[in-house]
Image 1 (tube, helix red, strand yellow):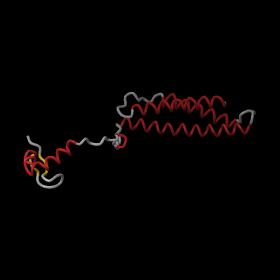
Image 2 (image 1 turned 180 degrees about the vertical axis):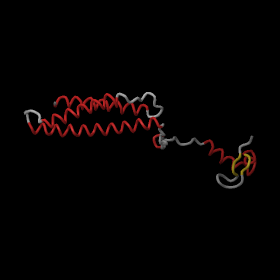
Image 3 (image 1 turned 30 degrees about the vertical axis):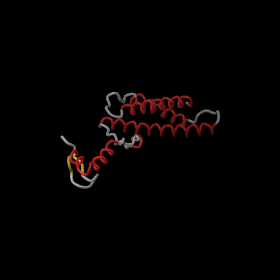
Length: 156
């Protein structure tokens, strides 16, 4: 099978078999096409090629969303603990006020419950998409929760 080319170059003229173009007009058009075809294409910068957005499975999307919610809860707990740190700094070395002790105890219990039942119970091994992302996020959240629990225990 003979390759079809446009007579007169790109975008112009009728399609003709390559052998016919080579034989016509002293082969000038053929030479121009052959030279174009033999030219090496410019290398492609892979980093500049846009990647299509990755579609997550329903299960993966649910896990990623759950991790996001747990992250927000931990941020709220950290904010509460930071406020308690400031209150303790203002009190000095005296005994903890009853309300603050109660709030810290509640925070400690909530952080332990979040870690034990929600983070540790979140399975990522069966995910087909975003598995590594979910594992990394879960691992970081576990470390954050453990640090929060330790900070709370130090204050009580």
